[in-house]
Amino acid sequence: MTRIYSVINRKGGVGKTTCAVNIAVCLAAAGKNVLLVDMDPQGNATTMLGVRKDLGLGTVYHLLSGTKTIESVVMTIHLPSFHFIMADTDLVGAEIELVNCKERERFLQRAIGTCGAAYDFIIFDCPPSLGLLTINALVASDRVIVPLQCEFFSIEGFIQTRDTIFWINRHFDKSITMDAILFNMFDDSSEKRNFIHEFQSKLDESVATWTIHYDHQVNIAPSHFKPGVCYNPWGVATREFQDIALHLIETNRRTS
Ligand SMILES: Nc1ncnc2c1ncn2[C@@H]1O[C@H](COP(=O)(O)OP(=O)(O)OP(=O)(O)O)[C@@H](O)[C@H]1O
Ligand SMILES: [Mg+2]
Image (tube, rainbow, N blue to C red):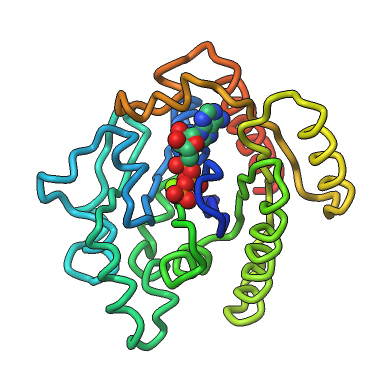
C-alpha cells in the first residue's frame, strides 16, 4: 500500500526540503520504491538533487496544468528505486492558474491517480506557505511530517500548520494524521532540550518526535548538489535520517 506524506511547515527555513530529500533517499536506499515531488517554486529539492532546471524537462507545473502526464515528468535518478518530479519558478504560475478552477484543491491528487500505486512512498516537499500548492499536496496525502526548529516562533507556525490539517480533513473528507515532528538543527543545548520537553508535553502521544542534529556537512551538501546523506554518509544527521526512514518503513509495515 502506498503511503503519501507531505513534509510541511508554514514557517520558512526549518528544514522541510532537507528532511524530505534525505528521508526519501534513505527510504530508496532501504529498497523502497519512492517518488519525491518538489512542490516548491523555489525548486530547492531539485537543486539539492543536482537536477538542472535549464533543460526544459517536465515539471510539477506541467503535471498540474495537464500539459504532461505523470509518466513523462517522473525521472529516476541516483538509485533505481528513487523517482523524482522537479519544480522550477513556473510553478508560481500554477498557483495563479488554479485559483479559478473548479475543485482546484484536487488537481495533484487526480494527476497522480492510479500511477501512485506503483510506489511504496510518495513524499511532497511543500513550500513555506499554506497556499494552493500546499493544499493540493495535503489533499493528495494521508500523513504529514512537520520539521521545526526549537525556537519560540516555531510554535505559531506549528499551530497554523496543525489547524490547516484539521481544516483539510473537515472540508475534503480526509483523515490526514501527523506522523512525525522533527526537531531539526538540534545542538544539545539545555535551552533546546527544555523547548523539546515542553513541546512534547503538549502533544498528542500518537505523534512520534525525533531530533536531527545540526550538521555542517548537511548544510553545505546542497552547494555540492547532493543530499546530506550522500555527501556525509557517516554523519550524525545521516544516521538520524536513516532511523526516521526505518521507523516509517516499520510503522507502515504494521499498519498496512
Ligand atoms: N540538520 C541540519 N543541519 C545543518 N543544516 C541544516 C539542517 N537542516 C537544514 N539545514 C540548512 O538550513 C537551511 C534551510 O533548510 P531547508 O531549505 O531544508 O528549509 P525549508 O524549510 O525547506 O526552507 P523553505 O521554507 O525556504 O522551503 C538550508 O541551508 C539547509 O542546508
Ligand atoms: Mg524548502
